[in-house]
Length: 330
Image (tube, rainbow, N blue to C red; front, top):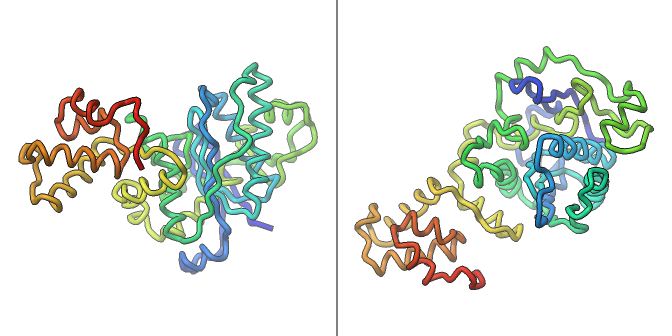
């Protein structure tokens, strides 16, 4: 039986923390990795439409995550709810069972709201996580998901991903002050409202609630994640400096890497310095700019627009070099 613990839900007070308690405070990250697994990165394939377009949809997704975790004895280490798909890092023996439970609940919610045309796909992408280094990289990849496509988002505070849970001492000060409700105390009517279903039997297991809503710490073990990273500095460096690892993770998942211009500029600066001994774009010859554009396209899958912005090549020239209708090269 996996350990579960106290919880907090952030919607009513964004400064609240949440998480699960673990007892092996002296264990090394490698030992914890071996003892708490196996781990998987589960990602639903994006749909051609909007699955989670508003806060009601995203709350329903988190309820479904909570119930799927409870039903399948799964520990959730990280999550991100995107508009047309979702990512989770989980510790479980049965990732397919976890996804099936989540998918059935979300698809039922969407059908009840007249959106049968936008359902979660039958089969997800499931990537086994074999090393501690891979686990740390993939946790960071999940919490960066919205950040890399939305410059208004901070991955360490975005409420629809779990990044705000980790290494946050201010939130932990509130942890001891929060009053929780046991899910077992819900009435049948409240269970139906919360689960968007007709079920009245108690499906929540040991989950606890804040304001009658499942708190993420019932199924997100943020303290285990902190121990796996070993320090806040390591976590921050991986989140904002280890961009190459994020690109590698995207390719493993079959997704196009998406790197913000600021981070791509740093990668390009290093490449130009190593390759040609220059550190300013204006020092590149036309031939070197084209070589750099090809490097960005084939190594990082940069968009034509990003290539033009960073290399200062005219967009029409970049479109000629990489026709928009052409299949992307590996």
